[in-house]
Length: 245
Image (cartoon, rainbow, N blue to C red; front, side, top):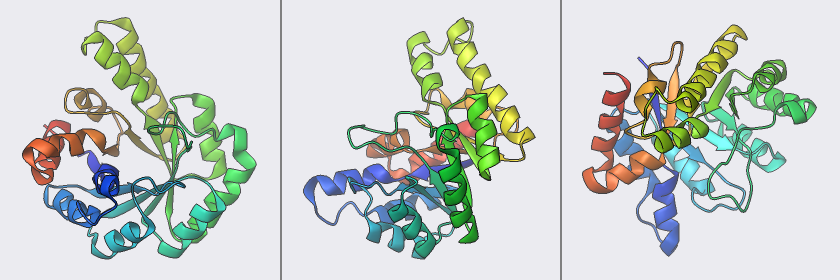
């Protein structure tokens, strides 16, 4: 069964729009778990645009499933992760001007520094993941850096899925899906866990969820959007049913 990690960042986005106390991401984490989430994901950004430090600490205290902390590979974030010790620390690229994460981490281009960061996090007792594009050289670099997990960036697949209406007879969609398949094979052959995520939703998730050897999907925006209409618990349950028919 493919596991589901639910990203609750955008619950905090709504709260921060008013700089108030609601909706509370801790309540969101509770509802997601009751809906069947296998993990809770939060991204503590440098600019603190949504999740705040105290959110991570409060969620960690009540989380009965894996807590995945998405983070930039900065000294500040590494120190915070080593203090709080989430189950999974996922390194992602981060830009102040981006709306959301726009691409995979360039492990190859900063291999020496990332080796040190990965070692610090692993010495702190965390499983360490890299959010990477479906590029073989990045997978090889991730293995060399010591990552335990590679999460493949599924944004390009989701974009082409939308363009083609999900028609796998369209060569460009088949190509994007095959890239993820091939990348997953490389990840597993390198002894790392194969996860995937980004821009997955209720209409495009099934092809990715069916990929061989996939362990986890991390999904946020689509689930929170669906929750506006049916509630978060139900939105999570529906996504898990689509992933594991």
